[in-house]
Image (tube, rainbow, N blue to C red; front, side, top):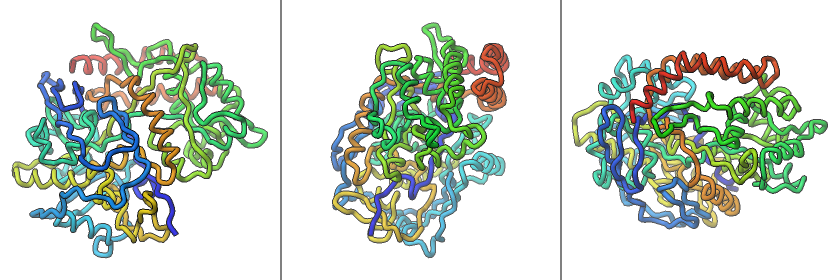
Length: 539
């Protein structure tokens, strides 16, 4: 009567933005120690990390390195955080990414339960992620934001923050965050996406910083005697594997997605290229575009495409990449880490992932890490009332209720016996559940993406957790993450798009590889050097 929960079945896909809010901040330790802010070098103390005193994970993570906790089951019965019901003085307006909730509040028992927990009504304006930037800019121009608003990067962001949002530093910095225990439980690195110029401007939705993974279909791999996470000695072994799972005569292709967007980054990782940018000891910034590894990656991927290892419609119909993988038309799919558990839950085959080798041999390539949080945090509109600031932070504290708690289930899955039930320690969704999901609520700091938990699939939880434990600690972060560049926001998108188009032409054999170096130089002269200077100025 019940089906296993998938992380996307209620929440929808969470599409990451390309630039974080944070500027020039880095965590010095896992306990909320000093960190150097952007701008004039203001000193910022991050929120102290205070772990949730609740159910212990079956597979322990590490907040300092970003390795998530793993859970083989959900506590039954779940425990309350003891933070509800609240008694707020006024309704709360939330403006976030998402889609409209299917059932109106007056007929929506899930929404009414959240309101009862908060002691007031929470109204929601949810805008599809593809339209959110435009809607956000319109709302900013009219100064018509919600009490709680998801902040995305726009031109003149520093001025916008000062004018329209509340500086939360004194409320959350250091041990002040202890007033909000669920916010204090957020991994320290996640706060990087909320800070600018030595100030905290929002609350993050923490993510596992495992970057991208190249997913593997178990049925295809097992039929050929290949492990779900194969041991690859070098780049040639990777190419041999691609050829082995490729069977176009039986409508099976190794890949089926835009090679320049997805395969090139995996090859760059294998070649030891920078993760976006690199900084030398003298403080000089270099983009991966400018390295010999990038040109070599294009050459390799062009060769793969020339061999026919991609679905013939990879460039003309990239939106079908997930459909092809789900249907067994393609054997591998490179995607953001969060897709791993989602795919494993919905497919009738095991799903693994490649660990990229160093291309010329010598061991595993260093993982290119992703953001430790969704890069559009939720901030408070400009207010001076300390009591109201406290109330709104308490709302975010509620949404951030941790795994194992009753409130976590309410925020993320709904009402027991109506949307879900617990069966032998597994969250099970009722297939006939009313569609009352409050879409977009999870962006406001929910803990839904923080931990590893796959209901009814403990072996998958163990495999994914082991992957994280082995790959994340030695991974490489993008040093530009947490920095703001006005040039990157205003001028670079057009120039970067030109490079992306050229990559596609080179990979398809329509333009020679020799076109790449002069195009990169043009990019550097036009915007790259200015971006590098703006990053360097932030220390």
